[in-house]
Image (cartoon, rainbow, N blue to C red):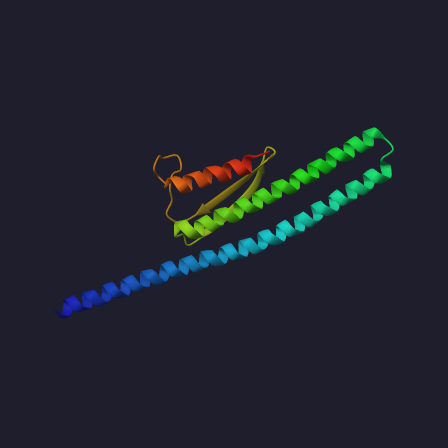
Length: 160
């Protein structure tokens, strides 16, 4: 009887330790996500301010040098590219935040990383975590709602 009691206590301690480890992992990811969100916000705000300043400078330059249709056309194109870049930065920032939110919410991971790289004129966003995973190419690997959400996010990011 003493052995059963010891086994039961050991099982309870093990369960409690596992619960504490899961909770710690979840809190670490949440802290990591919070820090990424803060850094992303700073980057987005800083980049947004720089793009707004560039747009304002282009408008002022256009007004100053606007006597030539060729100059006006070129400055208008630069201004349009600047606005487009701001939109792309917003999409990437949103996609990064959404991906990290999903890691915290669904993966039970202890850690995650986000990498943004430029490849051939495109920006590639890669999110990796050490949680339970799924294969989006395997039918039924996820419930339909999550699968639709990933497809919708992919479509929104790929809009040009």
